[in-house]
Image (cartoon, rainbow, N blue to C red; front, side, top):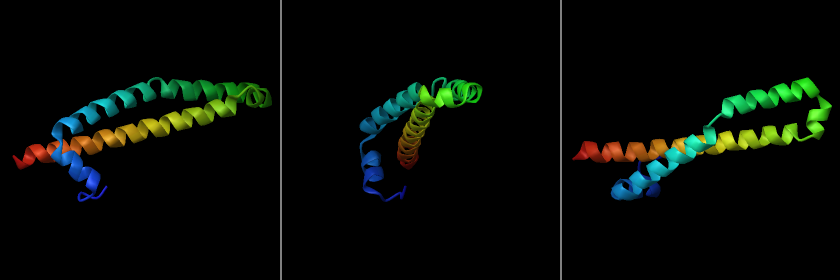
Length: 94
């Protein structure tokens, strides 16, 4: 994200809100990524072991839900890093 973007500048000016958003994004990242690797492995094993029957039972839908969960977790992580960057640069300027 451009350092001159309006969202980044807003984060830089509002340290308390930035810190609250940092904490919220950290919690969301942790909740969404909890056991994600294990669930991907279990889903892959289910699909490989049962083939078409697993697809009919929703194995592919579950896989897509896991991909969505991983994508949302990564978005939360990126928001966390953006807030961290804004706060660190604010502290460095003082």
